[in-house]
Length: 390
Image 1 (cartoon, rainbow, N blue to C red):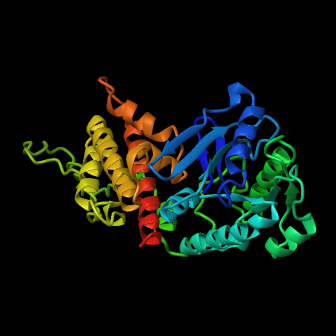
Image 2: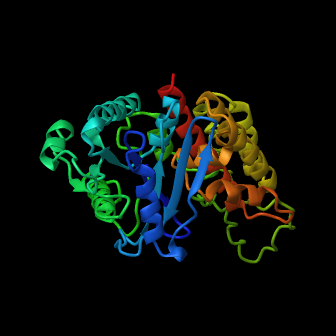
C-alpha cells in the first residue's frame, strides 16, 4: 500500500524481490543500494532468526519524476536464502505495491523457480490478491553463467501473464536497474489507472489494491478525525410587542397624576437547545482494546494531548509485538519497528511517535491526532494480516 508523507511530500512505494533461494535477490538489492547516492539511501537492514533473514532498505531515486507534487521514495524488501517459515514471506508481501520475481536461469533450477512462483501466487491469494492485480516484472538472472536456459524457454515456463522480462546478472549489475525502473513505472501507471493518486496536486491516501467494499480501511478513509464540527450560529430573533399609547390630555385639564407602571419589554425567547448528538468514537473499529481507544479519545477531547500520545504509543507497541508473535517471528524479528516496516508503514512513524511520547514539554493538539491516526492505521493493517495468516 503506497503511503503519503505530507511533511516531506513523499510517496512511499513498497517493492518486494521474490524468488527461489540463492537466485540473486540479495545481490540485486545490494547492487541497487551501491548504485544509489549515499545521501539518498538508507542502510541495508538485515533482521535474522536462527533460520530466516529479511533484508530491507529505502531510498529516494534521483531519476524518478515527482508524482502530483510528491517525490517517490522506494522501500525494497527481500527474504534471502532458503526460507523455512512461509509466514516470513507472507509478512514481507503485506502491503507490497509491486513485485520483482528473480528467477535463476540455470536449467537445474527451473523447478525451484516454478515452486517459488506458485508460492508467490498462493501468498497473494491469501491476501485477497492475484498475480494479475499487482505490478510484476521478471529478472531472468545469472545470464553470465554458461549453459543457461534461453530467454524464450524461461519465458514460456514462467511468464504466462506476459509481463516485462529483463535478462540480468546481479553479480555484475547488468539489467538490475533497468528492471527496477520498469517496476517503478508499472506501479505508478497502476496508481494512475486505478485513480489512487487523486486528481489534484497531492497524492491521496488510498486503500490497498484488493480492498473489498465496506472493509475496515475503507471506513477509516471516510471518517474524519475532527473531534468537533462547527455549528452555524443562529442569532436570536426578537418580536416587538404592541406599544401602549397614552391619549393626549383633554384641553384645560391637568394631567392625571403619574402612575408607576412596568415598562413592557420585548420577550426574548432563547432558541431550544439542539438535541444531544451521540458521542463520536472510532473505538468500534478496534477488534480488541475498544476501551483503551475510548480513553485516548477522551484525552483528546479534553485537551490532554500528552496523555493521548503516551497511550497511543503504548497501544501501538503492544499491537505490533502481538503481530510478531502471531506471525511466528523470533529473535530480532520480534520487534515493533520491524513489524511496522514490513506492514508498509512509514519507517519514521514509530520513532517519531516514541519521541513525542518522551517529550517533557507541552504538545500541540495536532500531535495527539497524529498519534491516534497512526494507531488506527496500525490496527487496520494488523487486523488484515491476522486474518491472512489464520
